[in-house]
Image (cartoon, rainbow, N blue to C red; front, side, top):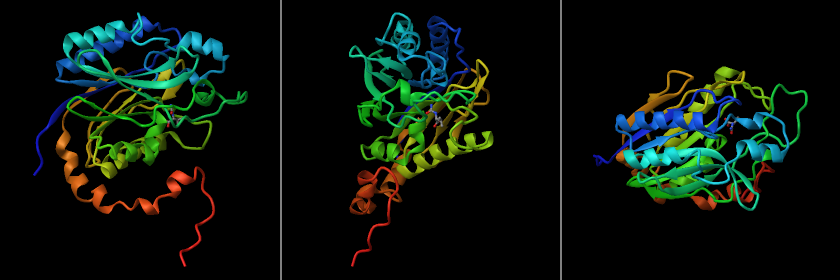
Length: 314
Ligand code: CDV
């Protein structure tokens, strides 16, 4: 028997943001989806990674040009203020991914959590940065996250908000079990993320149908193995001719998908989630306090890459 603790959760998928699109026009799209989410009962709306611009790491340019064109130096800014204002008016919070330039000149792939009063209550900076930093001249497009962003320096925090505990991550982080386990060890009941996943990959050979499969299987396994809800928002479709997968989802702690986008356009999906549903898993099969054996897991923090087998205990 579980309690009934509800949260209205919306995931606001975005269709393409092209190079020519202004911040103003993008924020207007976000505001419209925030309104739709609120009208359907959402208390929290999840937007994608780099929601305010095109997924610019596909383009080679100087760091100065990238910063000037695609990074935010303040949040809220004049362009994003309407989102915060409408959030406060409608009493609906949101998660927003954007490229952050700090006053010290550091750059991160960042997500914020904004509460129902329009106040920023959490920040995460992406840790698992995929791609490369060199110019792959022969490649059809680049994936320059390692050039434009530093590795996040805020850890994997969990925030007390929305009457629950919320963990945040971004895109590639979702493929790493460590991300979710660190959230779950802080008793997160909900993990949220935005993503930009190109349908073709210049780094390893994964055909388009597997791109969707590995996306979903990562989220479903993470939800089940950590007894958490997960909400994941895509930016998708053809951005100036470069295709990215959709497949925005809300996943239950049972690993079942309770809502999934149908399009590759702006689309809001919604579920009135019962936050207690993870308790059955966290109290039994994945009762961490009872069953985890961290003394056997030390390689997870000692080694980055795979190495030789450990010597068997005598
Ligand atoms: N933006 C991303 O982190 N994208 C990666 C791609 C490069 C594989 C992802 O994991 O979807």
